[in-house]
Length: 333
Image (tube, rainbow, N blue to C red; front, side, top):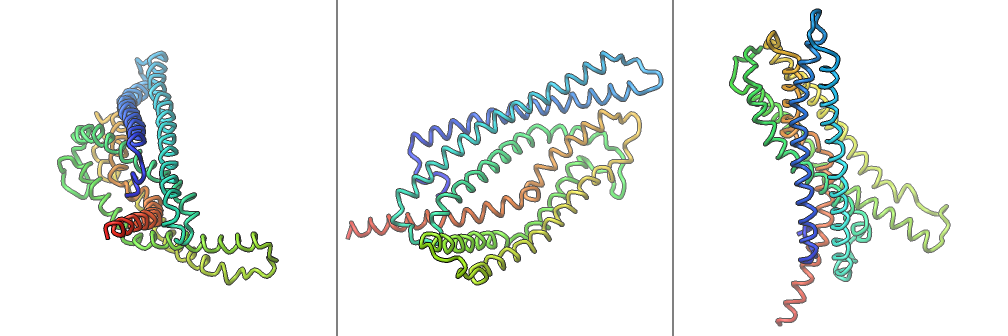
């Protein structure tokens, strides 16, 4: 398995401590974001009261509410920086362990096409992508735990809707329907992209190999058959970008439609006593929960790349396991 191949017990403990620290930062980060959400409602209500003709809100009240909101935002920025440092440190440590593992088994994998690129570049890409998704998944789980009850509570204020009858927990129903549609639209056209990314990496490795051979042999590059060597790279890239931009258009359309979903169905309820602060708080909670359910839609490009890199590295892991099993069977016989 790529995740922990070649890691010693001591290395696993270090990696676990890094992950525990990152999880603790994520919990504290989401707590601050949740508190900032409540402060956002307070600031919105104070701001709405301040712009009335006969307002009892003083400048000090407005500034106090504003700076309280800013303090939460600054604390979130600082904590995100700490979490990012810890995650990058752990991922670099993990990448070194994977690289050492593959180098120790070099005699079993050196015949694989582009093996040097896979060890040097693909381990880096894989670890970075895994870092990104690990952080996103952990944060989204905590985010769902915090914001989902808040969204369900705020849904009680949506008493009138258009097109559909009033439904309990309407906002959550809209998010689920919207995410199912968006994920279905993205997944089916994307099923070939990971294979194309895999082929791109393979063709690029072969092209780079030919260039390196010309360089090492000090041959005249005027004799280099550029069209013949690059044609397969070019064709694979063209196939990839045609599919990618089609899916990108679908993704952007989905996001634009998602933005107006809340306004389309909740607009009839936006009458007094529905305040500006309540509107801001509800929209923020709606966006946070919606981002969790639309995880695949938001990160489809990185997911495709992750699958392609996983396939490339997994081939080397299988090769080392197969070689070790062959050696063991030879010993027993």
